[in-house]
Length: 202
Image (cartoon, rainbow, N blue to C red; front, side, top):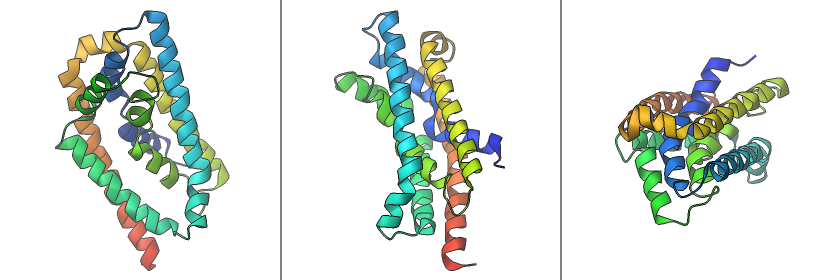
């Protein structure tokens, strides 16, 4: 049995649903309500498919390349830590991806589904939290359900994006993103230390 709350918070931190709100608003600013709902649905479904692909094939690809999962766990933890630092000290997710939305041809796929929802951190998390050596099939199913639950939260928040943005504003979304970055940094450190322990048999 997995720790449902910890898994949910982990995915919530790497996906950052609240940080997606200003991105969604920027991407859909020229669309009507019906089109916005369709874009939100497409973005959520595409993100789910991408993350499910990493859950199913991520470890297979690593095995085929001869990369031990412990090494991937260490590397993944380091990348997640750097990702967390960028959330805390750098340009926050809402600020960075809203700018991307303003510079690119706005679609549900980019930058909304990738990299706003199914970003590098979420992809790494999908692999790390479903390792066959650490989790049995039922536990992996539970993890996937928690991941999908976070994506449902993303979808609901996108549908209510205008209202939420009026309440917390871009600054509020930025603050939440940085707090999630701090939580993610702690999780990433734990993953790295766990990988080192496994790799060296400590």
